Length: 399
Ligand SMILES: [Zn+2]
Image (cartoon, rainbow, N blue to C red):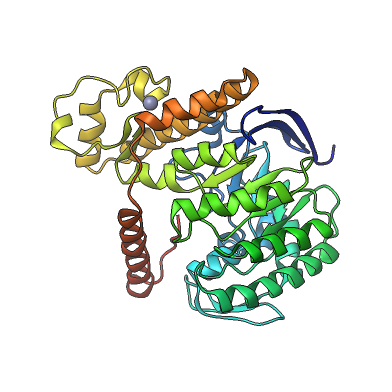
């Protein structure tokens, strides 16, 4: 069984779509959210949890697995599915974004990107040919072209990066030898409408089985991100799946789906969970807050997740305060359930022809984190990661 996308239904008053992706490891009902398993594990959970949560696709990071344990080790252990004990669909990214955000001393040339590992400082060269070979060794069902994710506001840099991304897309296509993996092209172009148009046009010409939208949710405002989707989506073929990379805030899932996105992935739900930030339909709550000390209720009333069915806010708060491992696990179960349930609700709403009403109702109750706060948090995280990498013997990070 090879890769196949079927468009089942298009919403009457938005660009929302209902579809089905078939891969060699099973089907994915779209629109879908993919939990991220950076190091071939979704942090704090195991594959049995993911199946119970109803996850149909997970993502793993090529950059991290290439550096550790090495793609040859994963290949020798039977490929990523067998190695991590997950027999469902997997998507690997190309590693381009991690080089952009994590690696040190990176240098982009037409040949590829030269960088130093954030783990041990060793030097590596990612070329389009190498990242395809590495992703073939890992064996995911959906794989990505190497791209250069530029700072979104820098016009000159985006022009240069786009030319390179396009040349690399062609080289990735030529380098592919396996026929059971779907290679997606990645539309770039920062916040510049003409570059986004040019990128979509070029990549559609190469006829990929699916298209990703990269370089968004990297510092631009939400309005800019939605504007880029408004421009890009209509230029992509309706019969191919569209994947918005690295986006997972609830409001962005709804706005993305309304613009025709079929796939999302993001570390947000799992990373927030480990920081005691939990999703509810009324916004995020921080379970460490004193007001939950004697709260006997679940994280969210009516939530069907394992955590909410068995434990109180007071208990989850206690676990965080005590630094217990179970805190991360229970919080992650809840946050992933929240997003996966949101996607199930979205699909049901599209099928029933009431997606716009569903979106309006959800957004009316859900406070959105202001742009300035997101920018400050991103900067803090970046500094923390950098400090951690340079001081503590270059530990793994990025999730
Ligand atoms: Zn819950």
